[in-house]
Image (cartoon, rainbow, N blue to C red):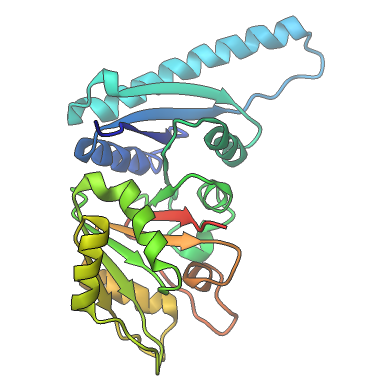
Length: 282
């Protein structure tokens, strides 16, 4: 029996946060998935309140925001015919949304994916410092950052951008998360001058046998006058993926070279498609 995955979907009730909800619903429609819509309740305690007064206020706030979250969840799920058995809501108290979500993901063994909107932080250089960016950097669970402009459409093509340093284990992990979507998976690499190349046809054949799933290797010749971010943006426009996948760790990997470029690089990469970020294994 296939495992039913659980997708955690945070919302602050803003219009921008609806994009993360829409993408999570699209994912759930292509795979047997349960959605958990979450709102982080930030409650300030007045200094002159007694414990009883604060608890009464907290209960009232939980009730108010639980009703509001239920209404929003129903509004986005009903048009897509998502059964109420396949989604639930949770209102949690926390001082910071990103810290609360990261801690929740670490403690909750049943969460497989966190899906959240970038809240309009269109450029990668603006993404970090936001709640979404902080969750990406801290979370041990894969995180999907969804642009605020996202509109629901089938997830048909997945672009996994890699430097090929650890592609064997990374392809396996990408497929662990995305296999059930039954989408085309393209491994995109930007070769450097003089770099030895794998034979794409042979690699595709070997990967099909090893992973039991069709995975295609695609070399994209970079423009040396452009940054890595700009070259990746060109590849995305050309290949038109529904989802981009990257891995990150503390080393200067392809992910860091895009998100944290040197001062000489002109970073103008626009996040126009959902980005799935997974942490590298130690």
